[in-house]
Length: 121
Image (cartoon, rainbow, N blue to C red; front, side, top):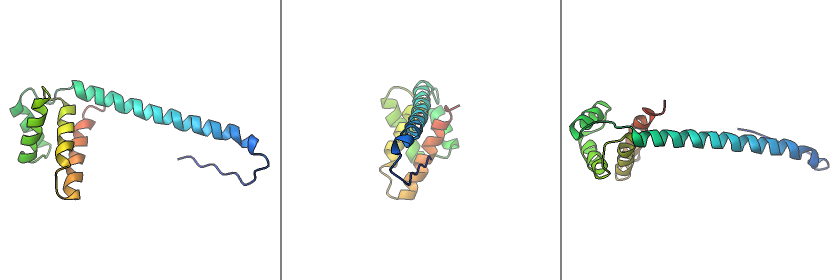
């Protein structure tokens, strides 16, 4: 977070350089974060979580996903071709939207993000 204050308007032109530098720094930081996230997503799209539906189901169960959520997520991921980390995260977040309670949705999305963090290193 960057804060900039200026009390008088008489010498605003002196502050413009400081404002420009602050904005450029914020833009650079934003771009770095965006690029890191894009790399994680690309890696997640390439990384297979399990070689078969059975193996993936076991891994998801160990990660704390319920059987019903796992079964539906595997079905969605299978439609996309293979069980990549991204296809499972995408399926889990799609299914989380249908959960009735906000707490349940949040918990499902946190677990899905934990899968994404597997490829973040």
